[in-house]
Amino acid sequence: MAPSDRPLLARADSQDSYREANEEDALLTGQAAPASESERSRWQKYREAGLSIYALLATITIIALAIVVNHESKRAHAKLPNNGWGEDGKPTGKRNLIFMVSDGMGPTSLSLTRSFRQYTEVLPKEDVLVLDDHLLGSSRTRSSNSLITDSAAGATAFSCGMKSYNGAISVLPDHTPCGTVLEAAKKAGYLTGLVVTTRLTDATPACFASHVNNRAYEDIIAEQMVGNHPLGQVVDVLIGGGRCHFLPNTTEGSCRQDDTNVVKMAQDKYGYNYIDNREDFDNLQARGGVELPLLALMADTDVPYEIDRVHMDDVYPSEAEMAELALNALEAASKDSAAKGFFLMIEGSRIDHTSHGNDPAAHVREVLAHDKAFATVLDFLNDSETPGVVVGTSDHETGGLAAGRQVGQAYPVYAWYPSVLANASHSASYLSHKWAAYLDSDAGQKASRKQKAKFIRHELFERDFGLYSILEEEVESIIDATIFWPPSWIFADLISQRANVGWSTHGHTAVDVNIYASDPRHAEALIGNHENIEVGKFLADFLEVDVEAITKELVQKGVRTHGSDESEWSWMGPTNSPVSEEGLAQSHEHQDIHAELLNSRSGGRFEAQIREDRILA
Ligand SMILES: *[C@@H]1O[C@H](CO)[C@@H](O)[C@H](O)[C@H]1NC(C)=O
Ligand SMILES: *[C@@H]1O[C@H](CO)[C@@H](O)[C@H](O)[C@H]1NC(C)=O
Ligand SMILES: *[C@@H]1O[C@H](CO)[C@@H](O)[C@H](O)[C@H]1NC(C)=O
Ligand SMILES: [Zn+2]
Image (cartoon, rainbow, N blue to C red):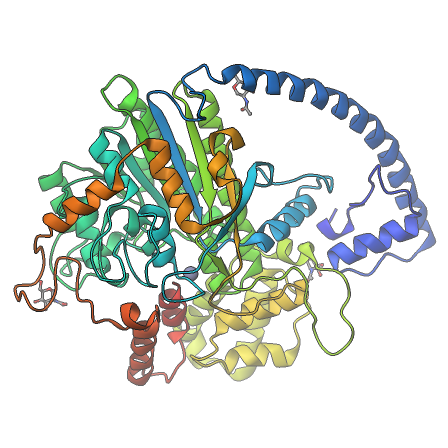
C-alpha cells in the first residue's frame, strides 16, 4: 500500500463518519480522497475493524502504563538521595554530564518531525518524540551584539556561561579568552569528549576546546583542539568531520592554508589514536574499550545529511553511533581510574544546515537522528552505575520554519502534508550536486535545453524527491538558476511549497528554543524560561568546576602560538575581522563567493555548492 493510501486515521478517539476521516486523511497526505462506492465500503470495514482493535489495545495500554508509571516513579524516588544522588539534586561523588546541542532546532522542528514520524511509521496522534517527553524549559538566545545569534556566540554562552559577539569562539567582546566548562572539567579530573556531525572545527565544538577571535579561523581551531593551546591537550574523545582542516595543504583532501599536519601533531605530540574510516570505527565499537585520547575524523568536511547518509551507511556512522562510541569509551576509561566521571558534548550539527537550505525533507530526518541519539544517551544513563544527566538545547532557531504556508492568493488550507516529505529519499543539496555533476558530464555538456529539463524532471524531482507534480516553468527555473538564488534553494522551495511548509529566511531567527533533560529533578535550575548563559552556568555547576580559574590561567598563559609580529595578533588570531566587529558572520564568505563567481568559467553555473557549503553559519 502506498503511504498515501493508508487508512491513517482509524483511531479510537475519532467518532466522526468515514467521510470526515477520509477527508482528514486527505488533509494529511495532500491527496484527493478516493471516490468510488466500493472503495468506501472497503475502507469502512478497515476502519471499523481498526477501531475495535484499537479500543481494546488502548485500554490494555492505559492499564499497563498506569502500572509502569507507578512503578517507575517509586523507583525514581527511591533513587533520591541514594544511588550517588544528593539532596540538592546533584551527585555526591563521581558523575557524568552529557550536553546535547541541536544546532538550529526550534520549536516548530519538533511539531514537524513528530507529525512526520506519526505519518511514516503509522503511529497514533498521541505519539511523541523522545525529546518531547523530556521538555524542561526554554532558552533566550540573543548574543552580545545582536538579537539574532550565530552558533559561535550561542556556543560561547554554553561553554563559558558568558554572552559574546557573533563569530566569537570562547572569547569575550574585549577579545580576551574565557575558560570553558570542558577545560575546567579536564582540569578537575574529568574525562572529556566532543561528538559532532559537522566539522570538528565548526563553531559549536570549537567553543568548548579552543579560543579564537573569529569562527573562520578553523585551521587554528584544529591545532588548539588537539592540544596546541595554552592549557595543552584537554579533549579525550574527538569524533566528527572536518578532516580537511587537519591535513597539510600538500595532501589530497586538505583545506588548510598551511602545511601543518595536525593529525601527525595529534599523534606524535599529544598521543592521540587516530582513525579516519568506517571499518576502524566499527572495530573500535566492537572492542568496546578504546585507548584514549581518540581522534576520529569520519568525513572530509560534514558527515552527509541523514537523508543521504542512510544510502552510504558503510562509509559514515550516524550521530547515535558516534555518540555511543564516545559514551562507551569514556565510561570504560573512567571506570577504574581516578577520573571523576566525564563531560561529553554531542551536537546534532546539521539540523541547522537543513534549515539554512530551507529543506524540510532533510530537516525532519536530521531531527529524528538527533532524537535517536538523545534516546541512546538516555539508555546509557539508565544502564550506567555512575549517576549522570543529559541536558539538551539549541543555540538558536534557523530558517523561521513554519508548519503551515499560504501558497498563492487563495485563502490557505489548514493543512501541511508529511507525505510529501516522506516521498523524498535525498536532500535538496544532493539533488543540486547531482545536477552539477550532470552539467559537467559529457552528456550534460551536449544536452539541449529540452534534455536538461527531462533530466531535472525524471532524475531529480521524480527519482530523488518523489515529486510528480512539478510544472514546466518550475523545471525551467532550475536551468536558469543563478548563484544568488541557487538550484538547491529552488529544489527546497518547491518541496516546501508542495508540503505547505514555510520558511522566513535562509539565516537564523531570534525565537526561544527548547531545553530538555533526562530528569527534571536533576536539572531543576533549567525549568522555565532562561537566558542561554544560564545553561552554561548549569553545566559548570553540575560538575562543580571553576571556569573563572581557567579564564585567569588562559589570560596569564596567553602565549603566542601563531604569528611573529607582536603588534598584529595573538594566539587567538586577528581581531580585525568583519565577523567580530559587525557581527556579520558570513560577510567574508559572501566575498569568497563573489570572487569565485567572477573567476568562474561557466558564469554562475555551479557556485550553488560553494554558496551552500560555505554560507552555513
Ligand atoms: C602551503 O602552505 C605553505 C606554508 O605552510 C605555503 O607556503 C604554500 O604556499 C602553501 N601551498 C599551497 C598550494 O597553498
Ligand atoms: C532501565 O534499566 C532497567 C534495568 O536495567 C530496565 O529494566 C529498564 O527497562 C530501563 N529503562 C529504560 C527506559 O531503558
Ligand atoms: C509520492 O510518490 C508516489 C509514488 O511512489 C506518487 O504516486 C505520489 O504522487 C507522490 N506524491 C507527490 C506529492 O508527488
Ligand atoms: Zn546556522
